[in-house]
Length: 269
Image 1 (cartoon, rainbow, N blue to C red):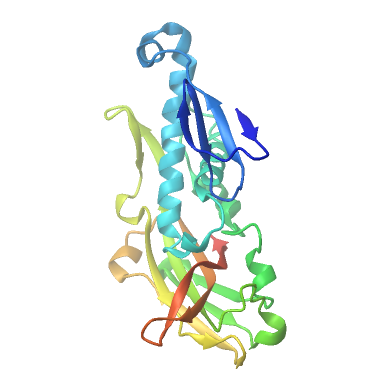
Image 2 (image 1 turned 135 degrees about the horizontal axis):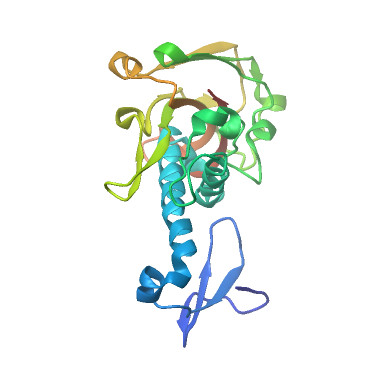
């Protein structure tokens, strides 16, 4: 893989060479095509180790996809591609399984729940640099309910409004991720608790002026009772918070501005 610098800015393919860009980078990446055929990778004994790694990687990608759902949609304001980072976290969690052989190792976030705590959705301006007060999270895991105390916000000093937009709001989400195990019957990874795998509830706060003082307040969000009854130790509960900025829309009402804001996982238990 090579990175193109200078005047050449293009995407696509030319004679076995692919050019593409990724979100969060202004560079164009060049990659040559080729390698072993799909049939050889699927059947040759030489690629048995690779096939095992690919099987585990499929579990990691499932983990990353479900984690995004558990963020309650707050990851939409991310300024980089979260998926590869989440896949990598999943792979590290899978390495904690010392009992099963490679290709069949479990991916259990419940073994190390803090793995996602503090996970930022933004790199350029992380959550703590934009919202300069410290929300206090109180999670009632057994009933899948969270209350977050948001301190008094003086927007002149406690809110970094990079784009100088007129409105902002706070969002809170609670979601769940089940541990994943390899099932030889389907030759794939599946969650131990299907009904709590990648589900979430989100509370969207009201719009406020970015030139105001917002009093201390408490935000509470809860998942349905029937889901709380299915909670086991194989399920990890995630609490995410985001600050989203808005502008005046066509009707004169505030509307969100794409990618304007920040978010992170407040706690993972």
